[in-house]
Structures are given as structure tokens and as C-alpha cells.
Image 1 (cartoon, helix red, strand yellow):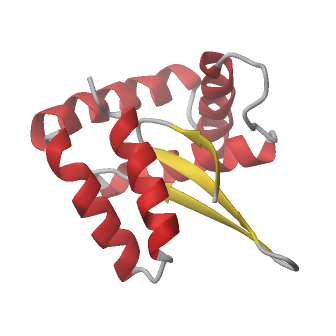
Image 2: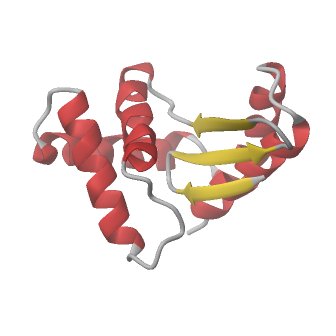
Length: 130
């Protein structure tokens, strides 16, 4: 698997096989209402062809945030405020030690190949280590 970007809430994984290519968007949120913003952010990375280019990750994340805000009809300021609120709540309610196992189980139940699930969960857990 090729992982493009992994962040606090999600990552994009591309699986290339001889004649096909699959793109998976993995995301995580304790709050259902925040999921469209996370998915929009990850779609922003895909739409803007963000790969491990030479650009600073902060610039790529800002561009994807802007894309998601516009996709969800919000100002960028409000989007970032929502994101900060969710980040604080997740740090309170979800200790990092459980993230990896829960994420692999969740993805496996969705029918995601274990190799892809482990890659995504590893990236996600590592991005949340303080």
C-alpha cells in the first residue's frame, strides 16, 4: 500500500495491482456530525493531488481544510474552530493506547484487507502520539 498523507483524523491509502488501482479513505471521529468535514478534507487531498510532494505538510493540510470548508458550506475559520473542538474532545474521551486495535477491528469489519487496515491504523495511531 502507498499512504499519501496521514493526519489526526484520517489518511488516504492507494493499492496498486497489475490492472487496477483502489483508493481508500480512512477516517476517525467520535462525533458523527464531524464526519462530512473529515471526508471533505481527505477528498481535498485527492482533488488537489497532494502526495508526498516537496510542500510543507502544514500547507497541504491548510489547502485540504479550505477545500472541506467550502465543500461543507462553512467559513475556514468556523471549520478550524470545529476541528479544534473535536480534537480536544477526542483527547479527553479516547486514549491513544486503544486507537490501533479499535481501528484495525473497525476496518476489518468493513471488509478492508487486513494489510491495508494495519497500514492505515498504524499511520493513524502514530499521528496521534503526543
